[in-house]
Image 1: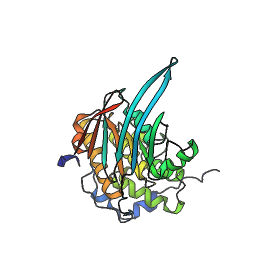
Image 2 (image 1 turned 135 degrees about the vertical axis):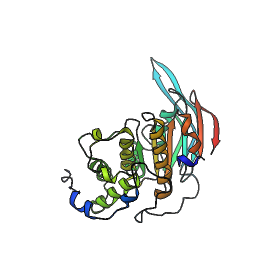
Image 3 (image 1 turned 135 degrees about the horizontal axis):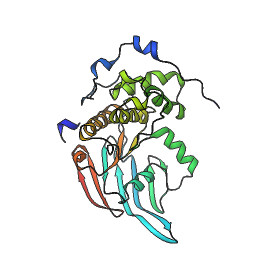
Image 4 (image 1 turned 120 degrees about the vertical axis):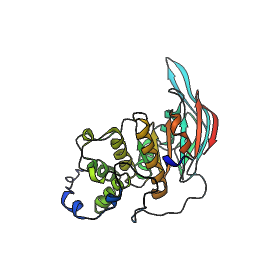
Length: 277
């Protein structure tokens, strides 16, 4: 693995005064995130689960187009182990985003089974899958998906609100996540005041704030240059260790594949190759 890539809510609090007075790790974190950042003392250190975190067995997905079936996924088998970085590689239209949606409980397979921990996604209704997503899954999107009128701090805090986490833990957890991605000094900036790489790092902080077990990222480096992509991969490797999270991401960028623990090559809805890092 390459060494260089390692019903109404209350008003949002203004963290200005207190956060400026508190000593943080921010002094050690500059604009670029370095590999091996120190683990925050507030991070929960749960042991790895026995067996795979998620299992996909014989999954197929078809859609009706013009009265005819369009077979997008064809017999997919996949296991995600705890604390791994897994990449689904393929061209546009290969089926990798469809598979990511199924893994995240956003869609259901036409055939086959998807089991996340003890949750059988292939048999669960929409409401039940939504509850699991809010508590145990995190999502990172190619276009960042940040609220444009909220600051970086407020965007991350919003994730905790939606997950119904206790209000008393919001401030400390938001600061912890922003420090982890190297953006505590820019927490009051809105998305349009941040670079593309910084926006993606805010999106990562937002995705991990509620302590998910599985993080799903759809082409997270597609809008970034090679230097920014390397920074994002650094952040991913750091949070796998500090947050004990598994990351499954899609990509068609060959320059980042070497940092993955597992790479699955997809062509026409099937895996044609599987490589371990």
